[in-house]
Length: 293
Image 1 (cartoon, helix red, strand yellow):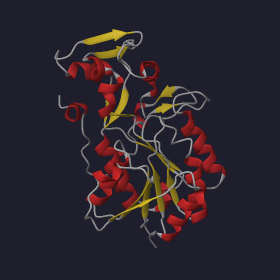
Image 2 (cartoon, one colour; image 1 turned 90 degrees about the vertical axis):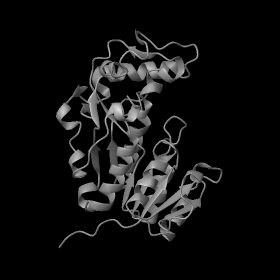
Image 3 (cartoon, rainbow, N blue to C red; image 1 turned 60 degrees about the horizontal axis):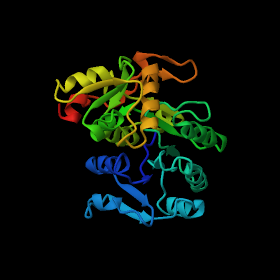
Image 4 (spheres, rainbow, N blue to C red; image 1 turned 180 degrees about the vertical axis):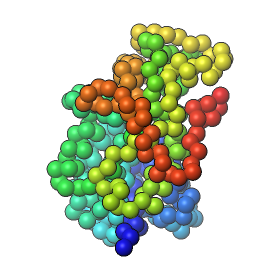
């Protein structure tokens, strides 16, 4: 007897980076989804107003009882979180986990959608590791999706968007996983609506759109922008330059690959795209296509 697929989906954190694209991916395949937005959020204005598969409600993300009541009312099977790491949303995911557990949600998809987080306190994206431990401690099944670096973030990470120059910290010769936002969003919608729960409960997903180095990406510009090799990004006119520098250095050690093992600090390229096959027949976007090169 085949398993019954998940039927009811909700998302918290309808931001422009991942949240809105994931919602649109669900709607594109005719799957209903509930958006739980903050009372002050204006991001939902980017969503279609007349799609019968879309419902938007507003709630206080710091209130487990309020979120739980919404989840119970709509009999939600899967809760997806795309709250921001940078602005402290990931730290607040414990409240969402408590609400999901209390409401009987069957699967929680936390806000990963990036590189594998470091496992030591103070490391890059460590709050995501901390949350994974908390979810397990309360018995809440999770599905963690790792896609490496969003291709769309390359101009920001290299300060190209700020300075007009493509900055590479150190040599830029270490391969990383680069995946388009649209591919990540479509993948999430696809596997949640087509895979049996037994394939998704307490699973780490590794996907990769294209494997590349920063030097290879710089070459795609074919001399149209200056390429600068440096020890650190310039501070002037570049917001959060130290963080971007640290991030690039982490990629340089191998941490930008979805095959990276934070425990052994080693990379297994074969495992970086090990779960791409769950989206049968899909053609993944390349770095050049996404950046218009």
